[in-house]
Length: 263
Image (cartoon, rainbow, N blue to C red; front, side):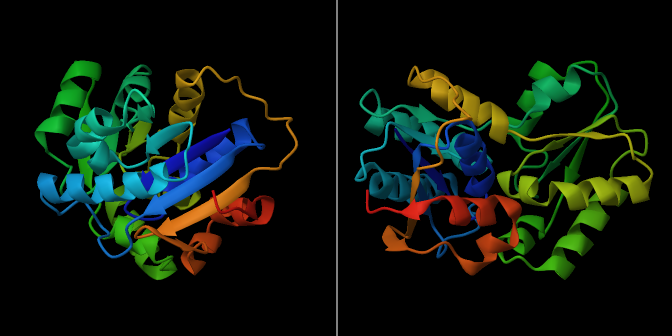
């Protein structure tokens, strides 16, 4: 069993780690675009072209499913990816967890990149799944880039600024960029310091991993022997995990558990 994941950068680590927890025996192919990261400020056409390039490189390794582990790429490129790759290769997108977060009532905050905050896509999610729930859209300038480079000081500053813009009584915070899940502990601490200690964080990685298994008719087997291999593609070229990935528990666990494979 093999799963491929596509993102501009390290944001795919959260979904990859979630898949590895459900199926420790699965091979993983991580295909990212370090030369084009971040995708958020790019035009929809450019995002689509870059996501397709990453997906085509991953597809050469013959995965059983491909996960678009990026909110921006899911918005702009999912239709193109499915048109080219399905039905031979199931493609699973990523949607911010507005619906489950809103189920508990508000106030609710959605942390996202400046390009996504206030966008028609995000406003539609809030309208469809959080109608009647007090929802604040919170832009997080610089946070994804700081996470990508494992810049602890920049992460702390960006997280603190976003926490200060989050309603103090927020019951839930949606992490609307996959990079943010890698610093969830730091976000919790910052929210507590800013007056929202009870806010539950809602990421998408666990749900995406579960949906990926469902799409190929596979069952979770977390007790399976941890034998899965790891293939890393940077700009389509085989590589090692970037050093910054090892700064996060998800990246360090993938590197420790998986033996490299060529596909």
